[in-house]
Image 1 (cartoon, rainbow, N blue to C red):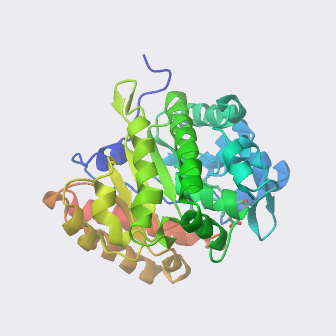
Image 2 (cartoon, rainbow, N blue to C red):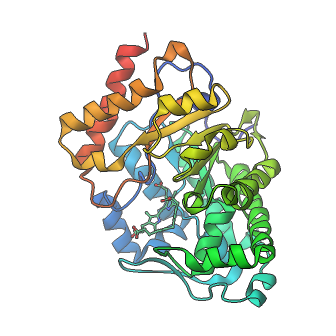
Length: 359
Ligand code: CP3
């Protein structure tokens, strides 16, 4: 027996598994965040983004905020990909306007070799947020759990934060591939255990954010990013309470490797806006579902442009009768200064299309 209310809207899960749907499900990466005034208010009350993310009750409230405004077909856990390195002892903090930073980045060989997967008890606040969010949803829509890819985590862990060129992590990859493989194997075990704990806590689908896979050379991508995502997938629990748990891989800038990603064991590929859904479908066939891929910049344009561009994305995937498996999304996260009304226009445009093409 499951501990949670029955799911009333399972469009997302069916689309990710390429099962027939009566409408295209829609959710948006970073749907809970700074573009919402109610998010900014709650963050101010909590004191910081990390204070929000580390408090399961507040994280639950934030995850539900976009669902109060828009008829979305999924909720996503409110957390961050850098919780894992934080729990490994790197000391995550955020500085205003500069993004994430680590107090103890991996500066030398000794630091890399000393690294071990975190004690999952350190991440209990994340699993509690999953369970509380799932319960608060009351079966309205499924809850997506997530983690960073082993490679994307390594980028932040070695650089100590964001970077414009990722030179340090690339130097390590080229000069000390043995060390890099050690780091990635450690991250892969950590990510697999972390996602399995999210699934046990109530996540109904999981997504791997490979934000920096696209900076790698062809060949290096397969060895240093995709290979370790595959290791994660191989270790994941694929079913919980009798339901299959779909897995989505999102490699930003991964358009040239779609065939490889489709063969990884993932159920769906998240696409940025640089590849058309039509082309992606021709290349991967019925192997995987596709999630995406409107350019987030469209959200800064007038309503009629947003509607037209949303329709283009839907038309690019094609008509439902020619095969299912599309989840409408952006090609990357919602930028922090998007007007909330633009998101309403977008979601309505996707719904409108549903009433016209699904009969
Ligand atoms: O999509 C959602 O609504 C779920 C929440 C979510 C957050 N981070 C919350 C967050 C998710 C899925 C993430 C993933 C994440 N975090 C990624 C991968 C996704 C991607 O964008 O490609 C990455 C690279 C990170 C690391 C990270 N966390 C960065 C680079 C930043 C700074 C961003 C910025 O604009 O300053 C964060 C902070 C962060 N994570 C915020 C949110 C809502 C903003 C914090 C704030 O200022 O309130």
